[in-house]
Every structure is written in C-alpha cells, then in structure tokens.
Image: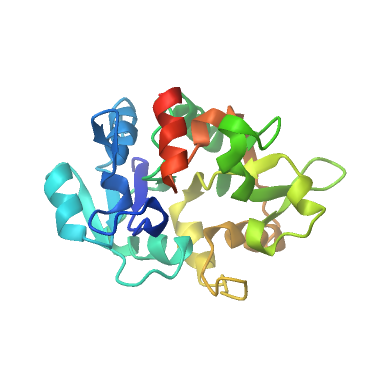
Length: 245
C-alpha cells in the first residue's frame, strides 16, 4: 500500500487581515500559497491521491484547487491533531506524510528524504526539524514555533509549543515545523491519547511525540534549512516569503 500526503488547510488566517479569503488562498507571487506546496507534492511519485483538510470557506478552496485531490472537512478549529483526525476515514496509505498548507517554501526533495528515512528505519513516527541561527530578520516568524527538547543522548523526548514554553525553552533554536510521517495504523491507535490541556485548549499534533515516547517509540528526525519551513501567518510573513521564493 502506497504512502499518502495529508495537507492541513482548514485555517482562517485571521492574522492575515483579510477575513474574506482562507489563508491558503492568499496570493504569493501571483498564485495561492497552497499551490506552491502542491507543485512540490506533484514531484513526489508513487503516492496515493493527496488529501486536503479544509474548513474555513471550504467550497472556495475546493473551487480553486479542483478535483485532483481528496477533501476532508474539519468542522471546528480544535487544533492540528483534530484536523488530521478529520481525514481519518479518507486515508488509504500505509504511511501518511502530514504537511501544512501555509508552508509554500517546503521542497519535494526534503519530503522525499523524510519518507525514505521513515521507511528505511521502519519508523512509526518521523519528523522534520530546523535549527535557526537566530530569530531576527527572515527568521523572525520562526520564534513562535514549538521547540524540540532532546535528552543528553540527543534523542527527542518532547515538543513544547511556544505558548506553553518556559523562558529557558524559548531559547532553544531547534524548531518543530509540524511536518511528520506516521505509520497510519499506529497513528490512529495512539492519537486518541492526545489531550487539550494547554494554553489554547486545542489538540496539538505535537503531543503525539510524547505519546510515542511513552509507548517506547524512537522519534526519528531529519534536519532541513529553516527558510524551507517558514509558515505564512501574517502580512509580514508573506512579505518575507516574497523575498525568499
């Protein structure tokens, strides 16, 4: 059974300052943000049909993207884990790669490397991470990313969201861009253990890392350039992406 990509694209993008359009349809270099990512996804061969999780103004997103994708509906904005679970009954792949629809600079080459590593190591959970030199200029949007916590043997033991991180944890420069690959059966079995006991009262997909560790799993990781995982959450982020793309 082939692997499959799930793209999370249900957000409103309220910080973009335009409530009349979903965030993933905001224009970047004369085409919607999500189409930059989908152009890269098309470069990955031997995948099952991609699934796009939509929510806010779902009909508009579908109208722009067309019939080449499977769509799943996130009816409430309850976090990234909730968004992924909204696609559960649409997934057919043995492994699923989860990416963000508002990450236009993510490259097919990096996604292919993550998939290859995941399969070679027969992992149940693998992820991309990025190390930023600082949180200034083009790296400023990365400051609010979750931090990757490792033990003395360099193994990942936890992901802490920025809003829940201590002052010391916020100084960590290894970041979580929320790009994961999972063994599908393992994911559905363990995702139900994710709780919403955090500052946002949301179900974070990042919490699956702690679930995996508690279950005795090793979380595999692959390092990518920080510019590649720049998400678009504000007009300032969009301006930076215009410079980098």
